[in-house]
Length: 374
Image (cartoon, rainbow, N blue to C red):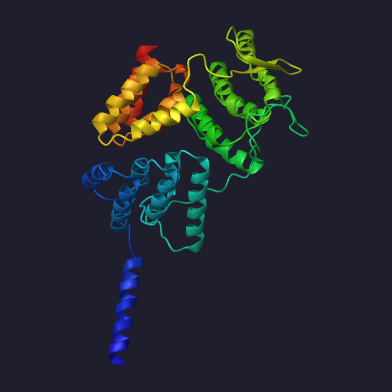
């Protein structure tokens, strides 16, 4: 009996120690850097995940450090697994929202958010550097009184199915509002639109939150390929007050002088190019990515990628962003991002490539490089 009681006491003490992982201080920068490089050198996402989980189980990381490691994974689902593990020992949980930006798909960021909410409700984790929680924003953003088109009964051409509902759209609006400038707002809206379906009305509302008419036009151009009610897109002309941008938007809708297939609405002509003038088809691009990813060594991967890019000569900013993500090392990512710029068919959207880089310093270097080439 005494032996049994002693065993139980030891187990209780062990569990208590395991649950009382106090984050009194984050991991030392030099320790994090060393471990980050070790994880980076792993040859597969699964090995990275195992090593990263072992690391966070014994160390407290800052939210930005969690985001940096999460960006090393190529698979969004594995990013989600790691982020869930890391949350439990994150030093500054109030900043954990920063980790959401590491995801390529908005749906996975929502899954992580739901997980975080469950952990907070359970009350099992303690933030050892707490701040007063802000009151939830229950107000609705006021949009201009445009003539927003309705999708009720809409049965014409569509470029996507099932537009997002009001709740998810309001979440996106909140994220866009928090961005410090037009470019970051466009990046946030575009990233969401790549994996979700938006209506013309919703895109118009996002556009109204952007100050510059030039940047509003960029948003409308980048969002067009993923709009639900294509034939209503002419309504977005209300975003412009100057005659110059009215004309530019009309030229975009009618395809300018390019050879495109056109369809007509009651307000304007809406076009969708059947194929970019110099583009790489989806099937070809998937083959290219598999060929590059199949190389064993980073140096060989860079050489092959440059050969393919130089041979095909024409890629979209989104395709280049996906190619950059194939590289594990930041130096290789940045090298490819710079090299591919001369072969980009839509350089005005090159800011999309920034999302494939891990560090802010790399984003700044690429931004300065692009500016020097314009």
